[in-house]
Image (cartoon, rainbow, N blue to C red; front, top):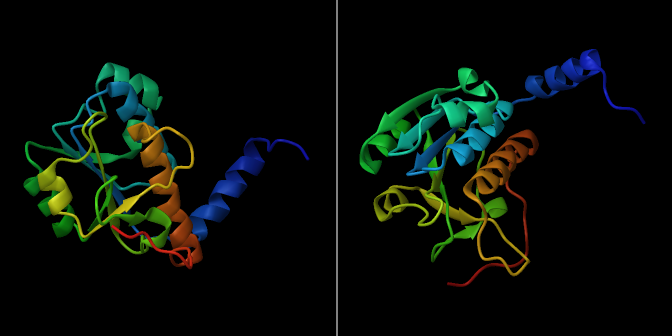
Length: 184
């Protein structure tokens, strides 16, 4: 086994782009750290996210954000909003269902939610998560199951996992099925 050369890498990516996939967007609620936003932007570009709806968040073209994103912000469209209602309204008008990624009562494991079709994943502030207004505006709420002693993930790590899960479901057409459920 060898690493792919540039031609092999292009072929691999072209093959995956040909597979069916739904539209994917992110609603970022008060993500303040430009390094976190830069990591999110880079992963979003890699996973073909179409739009970022930014609620009082750092800017993708800020110097620290752009440095971490390594120039990938040029592949994304984004809009800035002063309040969650406006951002969620814009995402809905663009045809997205809004799915929160949050540790909240009533949330289900992310892999059990239907993330196929046109989905906007909502992620919140590094310390406080999603605002109540954003959470209330979502169609579903999912969490990322964790087995260790740490109670939460960095927002950039959570965004990467959630984006990949959405794409995985779109490639395989549906959520993973489990025989257990979470009681809240």
